[in-house]
Image (cartoon, rainbow, N blue to C red; front, side, top):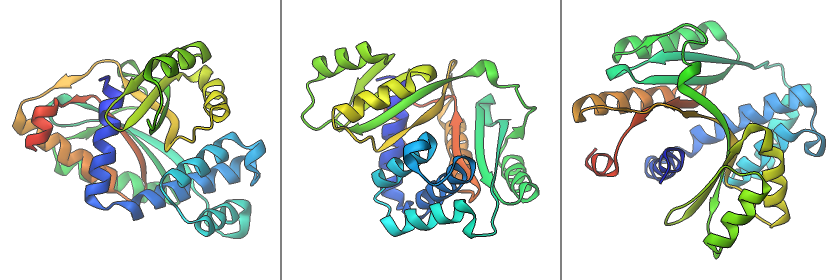
Length: 246
C-alpha cells in the first residue's frame, strides 16, 4: 500500500475512534467560507467550493451548516479568514508542513510555535521543505463493488498516476494538472469521493525508533487538534505493526 493510501486509512480510523467530528466540521466550514469569499457562492462556477461541499457531504455535515458557511463567506458575517502555512521539523528530524486558516495570524503562529517548542520541534523558514514534498491530487471513497482491474485501467486512462485499493476504500492519486479530469471522470461514473483535494506527499520518508515515533505522533496529534489548523503533512513512516502497538 502506498504511503498516502496507508495514512488516509489510518486517519479515517483514528478520526472515527477519537470522535473528532466537530473538529472536522470546523475545518470544512473554514474551507467553504474561504472558497466562497474568493470565487463566489455558486459551486458550479467555483471548483474549490464545489470540492469543499463534496468533502462536507463525505463528512455527513448537515445541509444547513453548509449553507451558513456559504453565507458567511459571501459577506454576511464580519469574520475574515486568511490562509497561512508553516514548515517545521519535529522529533527525530521529521518534516511537517502545516496549513492553517485563521482570523488572527499572530495568535495562530504563537500557538503553533508553542506546541513545537514544548514537544521537540522547531519552526523552519518558508520553502525549506519544498524538496521533501510533492503536490498531488488525491481522491478517496468506499470501494463498493468496483472491479479493481477495470477501474484502475479507467483511471489511468483518465490521467491518474496511481490507484490503491484497501479493505474498505479506494485512493486515486494524480498530477495536480490532471485533478479536474479525474474529478470529472469520477462524476461520470457516479462516484462521490469522501475526501478530495490537493495534498503534499512526502518524497523522502523517515523511520524512527518506537519511542521517538510516539513523541512524533503526539506532536502531530496536538498540531492537528489546534483550532486554526486545516491540514498537517509529514514524512514520518510508521509500519502497521508499530502503529498497532501505539
